[in-house]
Image 1: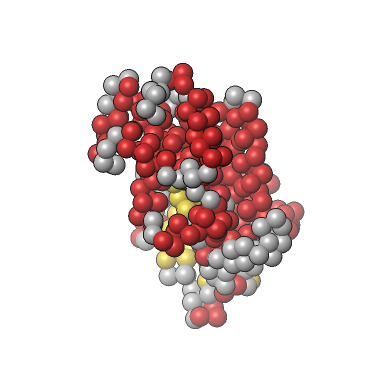
Image 2: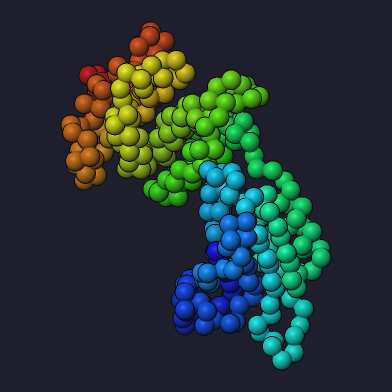
Length: 338
């Protein structure tokens, strides 16, 4: 298992890096030591050592959190010990401020249901704060989905007030609620296994958590593209649209079409196509080089994407939505053919 040494100090010069193995063993000026073992499996002595900067500790704990979502029995097999040190005053030890103790200990509140916990050197107040926080259960699948829908509705309200920047932040929070982290153009999907269960309560009772999550993702992608278009961020709008369209194209089969009809309806997919096509058309009409880059990603141009998306607007009501979308972007000079 692991020894985790937490420090303020850069390991080499002023470059904040993480050390492991022999380099980590050689470092003694650290603030806290965290030992993770699994005696039930015979691992009662840590066999790996690494050093992490205090400012990165929350990221380490966040990764652990996502791992425990997919493997719910993981933490129940682990023992942890937290040892506090004061390396800056070896000859004249001084109490480490509670504020620093909290920074060293409280990020582990997302690590729950451990088999055994020990503390050495920490103030009783901080220890109890951690133990109390660990007792707060993870948000359920039902709560995650409801929180995501609530954040999405706030984004829609911001759109109605012509505030796409606030809307984008709300949609990002909605993704985060269902454990999809958006950072720039990077998207990280966590906790797939966690959502593989039937919802027991709330407005989506009886549905699969995975199904509701897919519906949310489709709605959020379309809304994110819309907010980006409203801000004039055409390249980002097309980037996220093309990315989602490629993923859907790879998944399209009879079963996927049946899913859209039964649970979400094809309209959310159609809006992704339509809004992506509008952004792409804008890039083409202004001679932006990015238009050609996207052409390499998907054969054809914006008109081909308009045609591909049109099939998802099946009813007269859907077609009216298509017309309203195009009218709303009429200021871009969309042609009659569209």
